[in-house]
Length: 319
Image 1 (tube, rainbow, N blue to C red):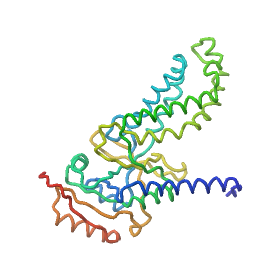
Image 2 (tube, rainbow, N blue to C red):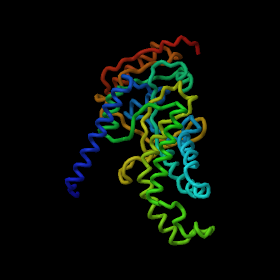
Image 3 (spheres, rainbow, N blue to C red):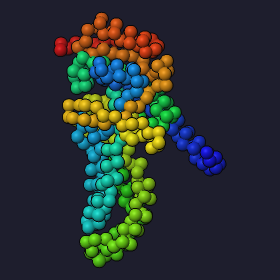
Image 4 (cartoon, helix red, strand yellow):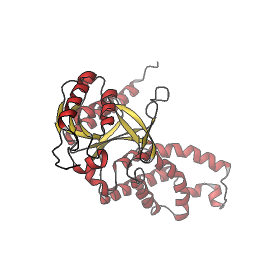
């Protein structure tokens, strides 16, 4: 194994400090517990595996996931570049925008015992698992470098402001590499339908640097959602669906949902049950309190978990 240079050591140390500071910031901003609503089958799988599913963005319940902010951004870019250049620009940049759809998301709710969430995700006969937000932030962000844990934003006006900012960053990066835009390419100046070989080679040299300058913008798009979902009060971990290096990359798994098949990657949240960030398990309003509490108690005991609070929903709905 190669020994990193002093500059590489410094860079690595700075990155670790940044992640630590970010984890501490999130820990202060987040509610004490982040809640994951799930079915009985989901609860058992989570406890047995010590992991949560990072579901691919394409398989979430919001049809605009992965495109909500990027479509706004492309609209802003259209106003910043010449019309004939935008068509080529869109062709180049659109696949880059789709990178957000290659990400996986672990979803939480910032509130416990929400009737709308019970109905939407468990039909009232499920469970809500309360995770220690500080411990999750430290484990996922600071220690394991899994991705970013942050609240979802539902403001359309704020999303438009962010799209404007992103569009400016993208166009500035484009102009820094191509000050004259597409006019620097011979095939563009000659109005040729097919690009010349030298133009393709030049573009191939530029694009990696362009995407390097703008790639970080893609992840922020996964934290912006349509205002109609604001009742979910969502927090989420956004990570790569592929994850890790190719050699040790965990296998992407497949599950069945009401719309067909979906892809996910298991994301461990603990090293052992004794180190678990789970602090509470709440039973849904449609469950029998006595029988389900007993089942949870023995499940936790059999799997080696420490004492975890078991509570019952206070929602007085008849299901």
